Amino acid sequence: MAERPTKAELAAAPGRTIPDVIGPGLRVLFCGINPGLYSGATGLHFARPGNRFWPALHRSGFTPRLLDPAEQWELLDYGLGITNLVGRATARADELTETELRAGGEALVGKVTRYQPSWLAVVGVTAYRTAFGRPRARIGRQEEQVGGAGLWILPNPSGLNAHYTAITLAEEFRALRTAL
Image (cartoon, rainbow, N blue to C red; front, side, top):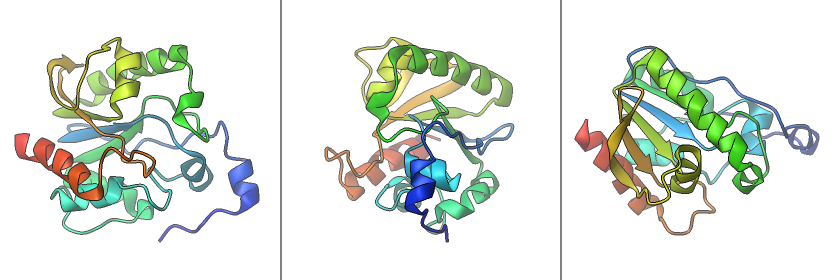
């Protein structure tokens, strides 16, 4: 289990980056918006307690058990990976600039082209809209592809996203898994 960061570690986290969990030929590459300070401090994706990414993966059937963020590298065994649109950790995603998000979108196309996952699943429709200039994009399967991969937009799993409960979030993840 991941250790809780100290106040000093959280204070030092802005701007930090964390490594991608990625490899060639994944079934799904999940793409977050950017690391939060908790993730920046721990070096783990979706690490903040209350983030619903890991429970949604499990409840939707992507993983046979609930993984702890410290077990993120086990995702590769399931054909899954994680990256971010923007690498730098911030307290809130709204601290990112449009320029950063667009540059992140371009970098993401390069990663997808290089690693060739079957699907790219962006978790955060608003960030996707900005990064890819698609203001009308909606949650779910998209008609377009990114770097040769099918594209699916998922809701942001942050606990701050009150539009989705843990159950409805898992249902959106399950729709992607079913489409595989």
